[in-house]
Length: 127
Image 1 (cartoon, rainbow, N blue to C red):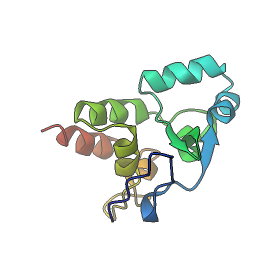
Image 2 (image 1 turned 120 degrees about the horizontal axis):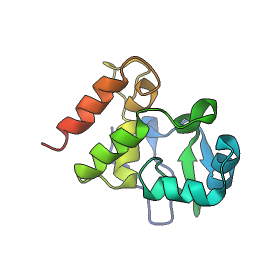
Image 3 (image 1 turned 45 degrees about the vertical axis):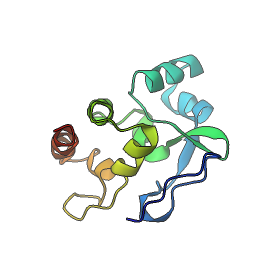
């Protein structure tokens, strides 16, 4: 992957690491049937990851699939934070193409049988 660090204005990630779709925080609140304040708390608690795109905080849509947050996402976000990853870097890692994972990215693999492998890889980043 090329080094595609977003500009301060919140330009989207370039290339294959870009999630397929984005949700605004009110959209996430509606999808999860929660008050917006709870979504903000989930971001602060690293249960969700949000980044600025076009000046608006957004969350990749596939991280809140089926009206729930992906089961292992909070654990992976915590491991990435412990390894020194900020939200942008965590997002890049989650969407980095990886042919050894089902779905092709750690984010896609979190929704399937390889979630523990994704957690193991995130944990290894701290060492």
